[in-house]
Length: 348
Image (cartoon, rainbow, N blue to C red):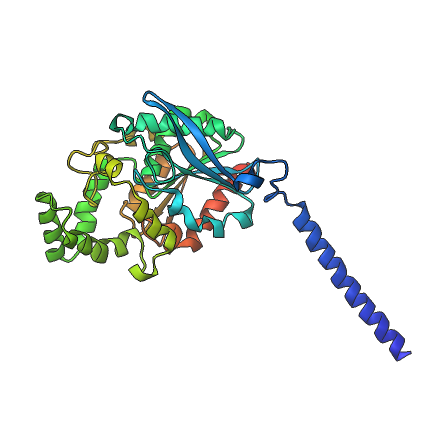
């Protein structure tokens, strides 16, 4: 009798485990997030080179789709200008689990895309139209299109929204102020003031003398500025994707638009006077401003930006300019919550 009871007990235990396994398998099978059947992605791995028409000819830009969710699709705009999608390298560790589709994209003249190296194309107007062509090629629309721009990508995202927000479902501005002069002022008066006075003076002297190629200039910035305000980790612990970003940076477009200095946009930088702060009120689409306590961008200013747009939310992480890496515990839950709130009609 005891044996029969034991056998029955074991049977029910295994039956329960089997049912749980079937349920888990069934849940996994229900997800179509990584279902690329009947898609070119099975061959391309999600990579698509998109032709961009410009006054100087047609050139191709690199995109790579990750996941498959027709309701939540995020196009990532990297910084620089002249950076790469590699700055978003750790998104793979967070967004797939939330079944949010995201698309890497290298802008024209960036490492994985064509490089016409024509400065007449290095304008915000060109890049806005480039993003619009990418949107059309990827079939992104107002029912699913979230645009995330970080640093220079944030400038571009704001410019795009000001012209084409009817195509957007949501907008995310990560680590970028709405005014280049305000950024330059903050970098010099606040961040510069936090540095060792002797180090800051030495850096500024080199900038005045246009001595940007001096190895000492880079050394001082890396040890006293980058590890404080760009990525708050010891240099030897910087992720490979960030190191690749710097290795692949296009200095020509970067210097032309951003300038040599890391203390704002100065000299002959074409973006030096860029400012859309008085136009933020025109942005109606749900918008998330992601700032950071130790960023090169003023976190209080970014909080203010969220009050200027018509439907804004702000989050300040405990990170720096690359806050997705040095405070992912705040960055990604905030990003995911915003996207899902908008998608579910619960954004407030």
